[in-house]
Length: 372
Image 1 (cartoon, rainbow, N blue to C red):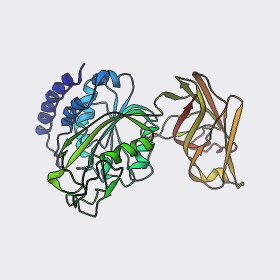
Image 2: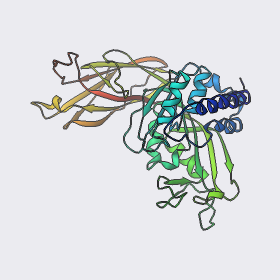
Image 3: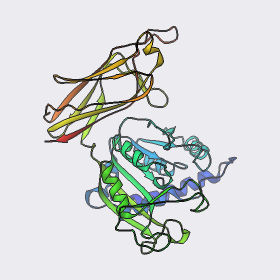
């Protein structure tokens, strides 16, 4: 289905949503902007085979990040896409009451989650086929960190953000990889606005955070945009592919069921399988994890060891809390499926309320590679 046909379906779905909202008596205000209008910009954005958006998304879960009232997510769900909708109540227009009310009214099975992108965060799932993040990048204190993190959890990213081709004083910046840091309440009297990138700055930050831009268009005040003026607002819409997208990672043995926020306990020994679509010179796993204080009872260090083939790497930690385990396997790896094995040299003894073998908590596990 060409994206143009999907736009027509989106307009019809918008009418259904408006009628649903009108029939609900709610103690809050709905998000005032038309999230589904982004489909019109996607029609301009997508080229070639990528214009069949549903085919691009088929078979894998998607994430609507900073979802507002979830209109885009509910529409994609109506087209057979498995979608998670995520936002944070403090930055959401109605504290996420809107998306929850619509889910109930529509009888939706969509999962709703809370994530604060301005803090260390975990996504509901470790892996998505695509992540949609519209109108959020310039509200982030650390867009570099967020983009780099998202690259490890998805193949495709659809994003939009405000950009500028001049500074407030008129100097041209569109060809320079720079960003303007907005002052408090300088943009729309809203202190949640931070970084306004130039177009070259947007392309540079995507390249530095492991994304390849496939399609990019700009809309709005494309001739003379600036970072702060309401009538000189320019937006970029981008489809990018993650450098990690060619690796499919799945959890294998030694994992307990996910908790409500998506993290998982592991056993003392656990494994993950990954598939290389082409031979790789180096393989680099990264595990964001949490070590519980009880693991350090009677010991000063806890050690994690990762094995791939006959190659092993260990890392020791001297304190509980959040940590990153990462290493690099340099043996050279052919295309096909491989298994990473992990082991912790400590384990939590069974407790009256939890008889499971527990070692560490994993927030996310990703594998990157360098091709031969």
